Length: 472
Image (cartoon, rainbow, N blue to C red; front, side, top):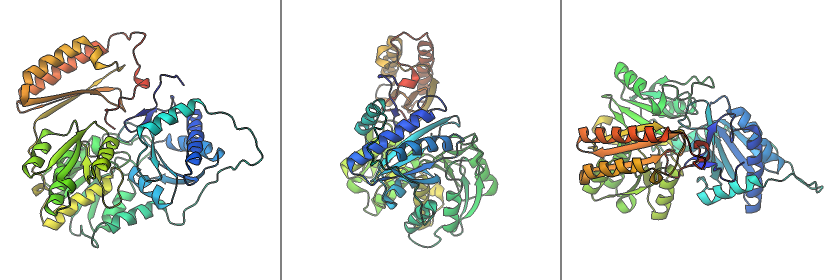
């Protein structure tokens, strides 16, 4: 492991299997490290592990569990289960550590690791840096005669059922979605069983798409990254709404009965207005990110509220929410965080349930709730072989300055590397659609030309980079 390598991006560790760090050897070392840290901190001596449907998941889990148990931690395997369920179950079972093996919305060849503390919150950056340091220093055990080997733990109640019961207890009344016809797109991911169970128990009639994982089809032309199929099915069946999850179900997008897509900004808008009307939007503030649409900010201002922007990443959103005592935050990707009823991270199932609950309570179709006037925005993702600091690239900076001058106060520009994929994300926002398309294309062409040149010896490769403001 290179001293200059960084393991953690904006949402845990991600990579291609079986390339470093997603190898069996690394997973054992990670398990050994986490076990030692947990015992030093006095945390409960059990870890819970959940995973998505990728074919590499069982191998990675077995290696990780071996490392954890070798150094004394018991392990409870949760099986295939959404990321937010692990955040709940680490507290439900009184575990000291929660681990998710998933690459979320990434394609099948990738996988990753997300870590939750005993409180159900993701590890802060300082803990991640400590993990990186300690992994380099893992030593063989010297036999002392009193070494405890961890065991496989068992649960009396199926973990998924415990999570579903917690969600149903928040629904307010029995079968609130009686009479609703929903189309679910489970992305062949971790919610393929639990999401249909939840919404059937809430009373909805269901059409279920992409709920037949084969280990390789997760996120493949489906789910929140590819909502076209869901939209088509909602319109074809005359459904009341469509719900699209990503691979680990911490994100969700909705389609209303008219076929319009509701992204994370739309969902924040609906939830913020509902909480505000009931006096529950604490400090009248929503936490968004630097890519949240200007229209959301203006809508909140119009009702006397405020949008606070943080760097991209749900962990950044959650941290600011805790610091400011706020209850609502999220990202345009559909990663929505609602504090106050036990949630500690984005939960696609809970978010969908809450948004539909607003429509039920108001006796309105979903389309009547989504009236966010968005500022036009263009996003271009440029594949990159490396991620040198953008400020070190004069050609890109010259175009950036020219674009910002042309946009003036009528637009907004954001350039940043993804923290989870080999991409440079270019986002231009403004009321002049012709102008923002020109600006985004000019930046994309320049970036592609500059970053495709042969790499200099001191440039950072993609695998070693983990930009702190990249999307999760």
